[in-house]
Length: 377
Image 1 (cartoon, rainbow, N blue to C red):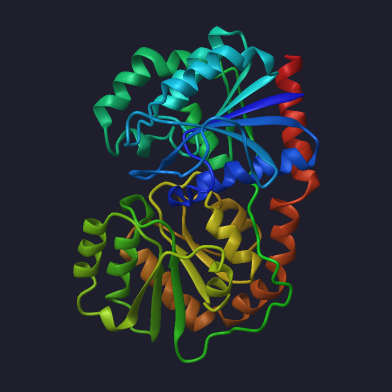
Image 2: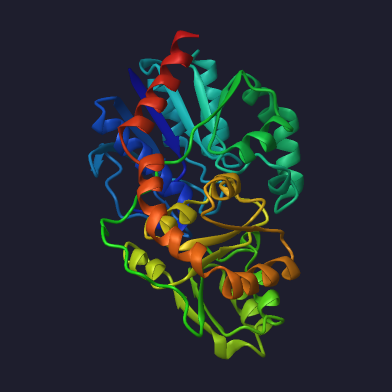
């Protein structure tokens, strides 16, 4: 079985957050299972370019990755060299797996692979939802979808990462099939889970790329009316102008907030030091940080629009709220007043369960079987 993965950005472009890391984790697990894969990607690293060799495949944690230069330096990631390589080599693979949507790498590579008669899997990574259509570049998205995207996706197989994402996708397109398989999530090697129940102050953590979709403004507004003692750490980066808007919004409670900036692989210790991760997103197809937090025993408060909301509710690994300040504030107050036993239980029980569900050979075999079904079809 040979699988070509195409993504506009790949490690070490960690600036793009969870989706990029999820693609890398999947590829690394497939290589460990002796699946013959290759990755085509660009040198994208935000507005800058990765300092990588573009003349030959590069070994990235065991995965053969071909980096191609891009012409545009924005979210379109236009790379003629990459598209030319797809045209030349696509039919030497059994499946072409395309990650994300709404960029010229994904959409045009999909068109080329289909023209070369190769089965295509598209993982939209949250980009095929009503929220995505109504947020940023609305006109361009509508035009692309109407005249090209809808037709391409109708000839493709869709991979979603949660039931929430599946529900969003099927409202917009009618692909050949839709299969839901969760992300692989890179977890820490921390084995001991020390007790960390709240004392006088409830330690809250927002850990994500800072953008409007993530609902950090909702959390800040909620905390203005919370009377319990708390401290919020905000870990992540984003557009500087938007961050300044949020800091202005936080006037009056700024003494209760620490802006910690970007965290890399040292994030697990930070997660473990807090009582509650809060992610009140407007739209989240999965939410890697939810699993990362639970893997070290830290409970979560997430919105109903986070893909893992059902998982959290079913396993009683935290609380699910609505995307408004009242709901978020009430939940935080309730955690401090009545959630001590639940926090302790989550800290002890969650790590082993999430490791079983989101890492390991069982999940790898599910992906391999998924590819096999598409090839046989």
